[in-house]
Each structure stands twice: as C-alpha cells, then as structure tokens.
Image 1: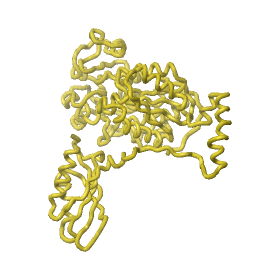
Image 2: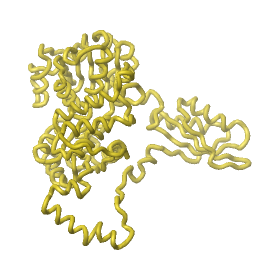
Image 3: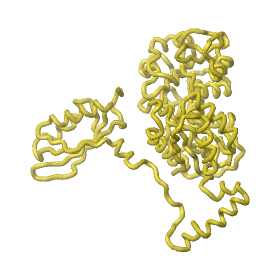
Image 4: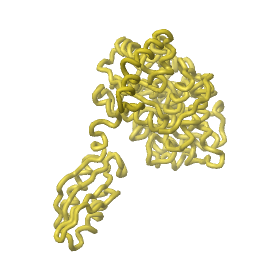
Length: 469
C-alpha cells in the first residue's frame, strides 16, 4: 500500500446531493476524513432540488478507494451514481494510434502514396536497400520488444498484460523525442524464438528497444541480436538505468566533494539493471565496488556463479568479502540498490561513511525508507516521483534513440552510453546543483536534446535535430 495518495489511484465519483444545506461542503470533508485528497469538484447538473457533482480524488490503493466511496456515501442526502477509475479510463482502447503523415484527399494523392506510384519507391529500395532509412518509416521507428517476463515490478505476467506498459513506452518515445515506437509483445520466452522473431521483423525498424525481459535471458537476447542486426539494440532496463544512475552519481559526488575513482560503493542487485549499472560505473572510473544479491556478496569463492555473476566476481570485491549486504554497506561512501524493498534500515545508512550517497531505486518500495535514509545520508535518490532526485529511465532512452536514429547508427557502444550520462549530468548547472537536485526533471526541455546530441556525436553522425512532439 502506498504511504500517500497517488494519482495512479485517481477516481471520479458521480453523485447527487440536495441543492440546499451543507451537503456540498461535507463532500470534501468526507474524502479528507477517509485519508484521500480532493483534486477537483465539478457541478455537472443543477436543479432546484438536486445537484449532480463529480468529485475527483486521489487514493492510496484499491481498498482505500472503497473507503473513500463509503465515506462519501455516508454523507446525509448523498446518492452515489457511478465510480470511475481515471487510470483505467485513460487506457480504454489503448494509448497510442497510427496516423498518416500525408494527405489522401483525391485519386492523385492515393496514386502516389499507394499503387501505382509506390512501386517506383519500392524498386528504388530494392536497388539500394540503404534508401529504406531515407524513404520509409524505418528512419524514425523503434520496436519496443518484450516477452512479458519482468514487467515493471510485477514479474512474469505475460505478453498481453505487458502491452499497456509497452504502449506507455511508445507514448514516451513520441512525447520526448518525436520517435514512432511500436509495441511488440511476443508470446514466447524462448531465447532462440525471441531472437529469430526480432531478426525477422528488424527490416521495418531503425532500432530495437528490448524491454522487461528477465535476466539472464535478456543478456543472451541482446548479445545475439547485436551480432545479427545492423541497427542498434538497446535493453533499456539495463542501459537506460545505468545512464541515469551514472549521471545522478556524477552530480551527487560533486555535492559531497568525492571522486568516483576513490569512493567505496556497495550495490544490491546483480540482475540486468545491476550488472549494467556496474559495468558503466567501472567504465567511468569506479574501482572499489562490492555487489550483493540475495545470497550476499558476490565473490569468486561462491559455488553458484553463472557467467554474469562470475564476471562480477572477477571485476569487483578485490578483498574477497563474503558477508551480507549490511556488512558491505558499513563504511561505504555510496549505496546503490536495484533490488528489493526494505532490505536496509536507517541504522545501516548511519553506519556508512560521512557524507554518504544513497540510491534506493527499488520501486515502488525502496530498499530503505527515503525518510530514514535522509536522516543520515547527504544525498538520497529513489525511483519514486514523490521524493526529490527521481531516477527515471525516461531521462535517457528517448534521447539515446533520437541520437542513434539521427546518426543512422548500426549499434550501441559503451562510449555512447558514457556520453549520454555525461550530457544528462551536465543539464544540471552548477548554480542548480544541490542535495535535492542532482538529476533534472523528465520534463526539463533540454534533456532529450542534450542526450541525443551527445550520442549523435559519439556515433559520428551529423546533427539533424528534432522537434519535440
């Protein structure tokens, strides 16, 4: 259950009250007494005896919604007609659509857009396949591909249930980078089938965004597709997270006056996101890192190391620490969590080094209470929107793909990821930088452009720019 009302549980209650008396003023009190927050109150129909009113309010969860409705229904003279969940209403019929960019008003326009005129364009591409990037949607299209195995924090809920999330991802691509993205939800979790399917559909896209595919499957899928395809393949859960974490940590360390190469970092989470964060931090200069999973610290003495964990063990934890997360955090300058809720306490943060930095990114419930962490750490970041310093992948992936598409890149390199992180960090000016502002808002107008320009330059592409949708 959320600790405070959230717009994600926003409802509109349509009800009738007597036209006279105190019923209208009692509605707000009823919602507040139930712990909700009124965000709008609209009179939709007025008569001499009755008023029809829509009360819109935010709740904490589904049970809290019912408690608010019951509280409204208990007001004398109130008759409840309908309760609408605003989040579900937003999703009715899906959140995205396809529109034609060209007019089709008469026979001439139809003959150029489709047959017979389109045949000339098809033949031109057949003679020179590279023209597909210039003459089709390929130049500005990304496939958002999932197998539904690791959707948000919901787990393996399957491709159909993943579709609303993929639609949302496509909407973010359009809103923040003007990119046309298409949800592709695959009814298979077999690596060979995923790779074969994406390879088969790749000619229609300028890039592949892998999304919500569980580890370790995601590593193999990405590796094989990068070898097979001549367009960029980017697993956002890995690399988008890594870019945002490195950008935020770059600025957090400026706030506390420490260097990345000198700090001791304790990490919780050795899955897709954790491994990608680790690799990018080390590429940026991190040297002293201990990574923990549910069994404790990852080290070469463990008997359960797969290929990914073995790489971690070989490149971190040089002293061979074999204890638990709490021991790894003690005395550390930085904690980065991409794991599970409630695995640390405020006392654990208090045991860290002076001017500690805490990134508790498990969502919606962080690894440690942000309020408790803020009592002891100098800088705290989470994945939540109700605290300062939200680490949100939408800060990275729209601009990254904008730069890749503009450069007509055929792949993604570590140098591009580092360039994106540096550009994202630089959006926060020295005058703005502080403990509660180490990373810009997702709505900051310079974010996508700055990241795109950095990736485009790193890829060797010409600056084309784009217009925000």
